[in-house]
Amino acid sequence: MIPILLVEDDKAIATHLSEFLQGEGFALTVVEGQREAIERLTNGRFDLALVDISLAEGNGFAVCAAAKTHTDTPVIFLTASGDEYSVVTGLDMGADDYISKPFRPRELVSRIRTVLRRSGRSQAVFRVSGLMVDTERGQVFKNGEEIFLSALEYRLLLVFCGNPGKVLSRSRLLEEIWDVAGDYVNDNTLTVYIKRLRDKIEDDPQNPQRIRTVRGLGYRLGE
Image (cartoon, rainbow, N blue to C red; front, top):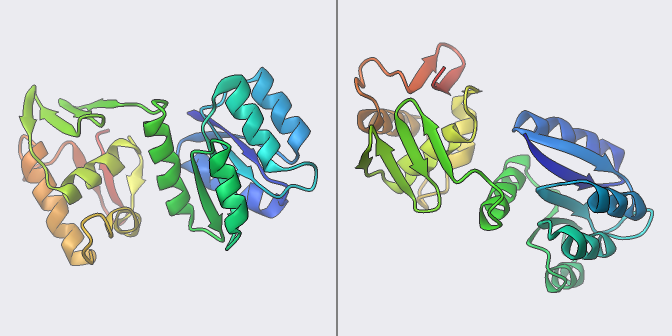
């Protein structure tokens, strides 16, 4: 699991985010204030820090400075909606991204994965059932031969690769891909793209073994 430090003094938000992000494959360490956050960053190892700028004890700017000074840990700031000054200050200090509250959890996960990829802290190559997906080059290989996917097909495959062995509901898949092509993606469109993806990555699309249907629940990549 990918280790993340969450610096958030609102216990309700911290609890909700911890439960959600752990379900997405992240290992969360939660602290409430500036001093403890800096201690954790100095003595531990984290692939990313999620930092609320406004803390009851200290502030997120000092935490960001420590993250960049001691470990060059990527930082995403959690900011109050419309607080432009804080956003600019945070980015000037080296923060990698920010997201304004309230935010959608799926959007936060997408931002986290983007920052991890940019910083070289995410898995760049996925291998499953004869498939190899090179996310740095945007290439997909099946049994050693490159196959070519559309933007939506590729994004759909990345969602599965990021959740190996997990059952993904249709609604979850729709949330992940709806705006990739700049077009509206509905339930029927998802069915079409699942079929198109299977046509390209399966040895026998009529009996899919890579993207399996889980009756009444959704789909799962591999076993």
